[in-house]
Amino acid sequence: MEIKFRDISPEKISTDLLAFPVREKETGEPLVRRLDRLLQGRLSEQIKKSNFTGAEGSTLRHSTAGTLPAAHVLLVGMGKANEVELDSWRKAGAQAEKEAARIGAQEVAFFIAPYGEPESTVGPVAEGVLLASYQFNKYRSESKPSRALRSLTLFRPGLRTSPVMDRSRRLALGLTPGVFLARDLVNEPPSVTTARYLGEQAKRSCRGQGLSVEVWGKKKIQAMNLAGLLAVNRGSVEEPRFIIIRYKPAKTRKRVALVGKGITFDSGGLSLKPAKSMETMKLDMAGGAAIIGAMSRLPELRPEIAVTGYIPTTDNVPSGSAQKPGDVIRYLNGKTIEVLNTDAEGRLILADGLALAAKEKPDCIIDLATLTGACMVALGNEVAGIFGNQQPLVDHLIRCGREAGEKLWQLPLVKEYREEIKSSMADMKNIGGSYGGAITAALILQEFVGDAPWAHLDIAGPAFAEKEITTCPKGGTGFGVRTLLKFLSSY
Image (cartoon, rainbow, N blue to C red; front, side, top):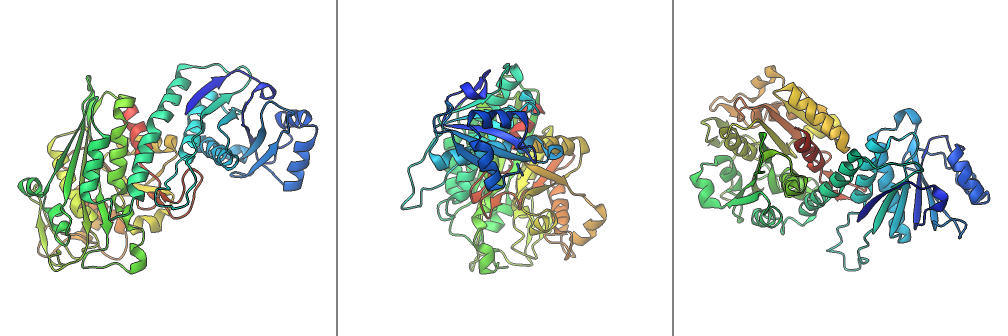
């Protein structure tokens, strides 16, 4: 899709769909009145009939019937004036794309309202349009042919293009394919997205221009003593994989390690989940998928940071050979974990990735995992929890998440809760008490990062949309890709 900037007035631009942001209870603002005059009063009539107020998420489309060069006018509700933020513009762009899809529009023009500074709003609007265009229809027998928007024009009279706006345009176009890749990997059935498949997709998507991929099979995993991954994999007929993706730019300022949970299907193992809880457990590799998606875009965005992604991947299923409650795992850093619940398996494989990453002494380690239902209880489906051992790193990631439209909320690493994970026969056990499960899980992970600055993102809630949301249909959201790419572009 082509993204253009234009200095032009609304009545002169030729397009299929002309989108205007309107703040709540401001449908009588001068621009809307001007449009209404051009449309001979029909727009105000429709506003009144439909009771359109400009509430966030609301839209009103009006056919111009040839009175303007644009075929349709779309009013997009932005919500209350004091609540309009960057993500409001992203959602407005997504609403415009959805309406364009309904009418088969190939070209959209979006008016950058005077209350929106172009340098800060054009990026979110473009991201919203692009993100909302995602489709995953490969398993529908009667799916419609996919439609692609040809162009998005961001305009207003007197608009001047700046280097910041150009960079925002490039970033929006650069990061979206990574989000779509992560969504695709999560949305595939779990019988397709096995550990082997995930390794193949990493090789296919992350190669060239400074990127390289290693995929370790079972023998190499055994030789490297990745005991957590081997333990979780014991019940499976599918072999595990350990994926390492490296990005080495010509010029390197810092080194970052990314670690992602890659459980391709989580039945709970011998500590079996209820059937209903398994229905969406293909999502349990969303952390690993986000890292593959983000790493695949680094050659395009070209940060001066060496990045290594570590993705331990397997399914977690029961069988006669599966790991059992009461087993003890000894990790490559010497620490031991007693397994009391085989459904708390993500921390067992992440410990391998974190310990391996810590050996390389990076400037920071960031892990992403659909780790705990407890985090969803605390923060719901739209906010990820973030923990960390260095506040500046946590603050930076929260800012990047805010800019990317991915909400992060800091939760504490409560040292007193370490008592909850003490084991009578090992260094720790893999579950804590009845409460604070997201915190005790993070405390287990902290034992494997050494002295490295580290942040843990528990993305269990926002990694998968149980119903359609503004920027994404039901299914994998690709949460984390945009935050990581914003972070790597600014760290």
